[in-house]
Length: 229
View 1 (spheres, rainbow, N blue to C red):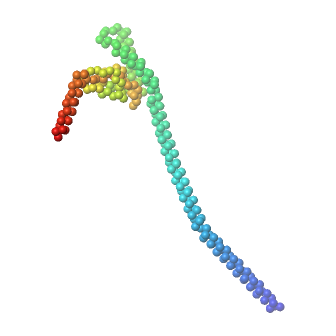
View 2: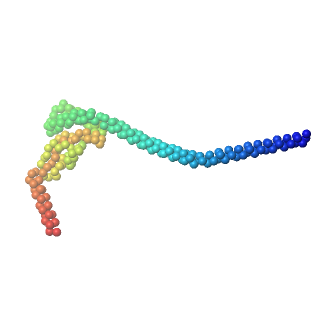
């Protein structure tokens, strides 16, 4: 009986060892299969990851460029808005300023029409003093709002500032010099509010013909010199 028991124990142990070996072999086989599968999958998954990273990097780069562009546009809009705001404050009263110049012109004409050499009664003198005070206050108010007169007399004619109303013959001056101011011109800061109406000098016909003849003679001399050379 004891021999049979020992024999049975040995058989049981052998059976367990064989089962353990089979399980170990199966585990090794499964590990090998999984490893092979992972090795086969790794290159594909690696390429996919690299492609995804490149795509994300490209998207980030695009978004950064769009952000910079939007910020630049917003900055330009802000500067434009600030500039328009300043212009509206500086030049918002330009139409009113033009309208107020006409009463100033009439005041100037009224004062210039008064004969200073003539003796006037006290009431007229008081009136003249009142008109001069009004003129002074008007000029002060215009200057406070950036409105200044354009200096015209004895300056070269400038079509951007002057409006020629007549030509005055004068051989003592060069042609195109302002010799008479008919109506005062004004600037509002750096913009033209109203051009000055002026009279411009010109040479007499005889003087202009003489100048032309001199120019022709000098041209002929230059041509003769060139031909000789």
